Image 1 (tube, helix red, strand yellow):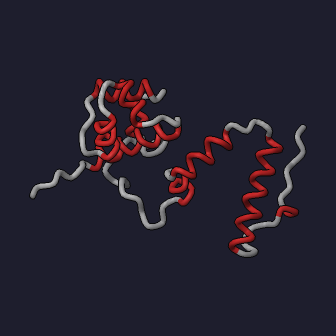
Image 2: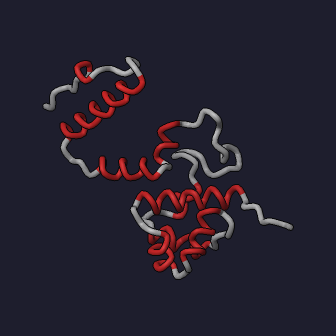
Image 3: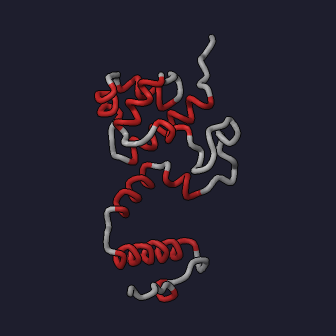
Amino acid sequence: MNVKTPNAIDSYVGARIRARRQLLGMSQERLADQIGVTFQQVQKYEKGINRIGASRLQRIAEVLHTSPSFFFEQNESQPLSLQGLTLPDNADPVAEFLRTKEGLVLNRAFLKIADPNIRETIIALVKAMAQAESGPALPSIADITRPPLE
């Protein structure tokens, strides 16, 4: 049985579409409705199973409020290449966390907090909770100081 293996670039572009869609809190069904396909087709795009034509990618970019080039960027300065598409064993834990559902939810909620004092308090709280679970590696709340606002 010949199973179609996704192309690495198609998988990468699909992963970027999925990440952007989730960051915006958009469902696969809603994206599918807005680009004129079924949600199953969106699933296939996101997994890299089906390739995306240029006009469809342009429409996806419009719906997700970004440019088509966003889907090909590995970072801010590099164009897409096959090198580095697989995650190394020592992948950035922050990037990995932001790819999870919890990471996206936490990030979206945190970005809605406008008050810098509240943000600092939340950071201190999370650090203290992490310290309580992992030991004395992180500073205590008393050690965390914030420069005064001027």
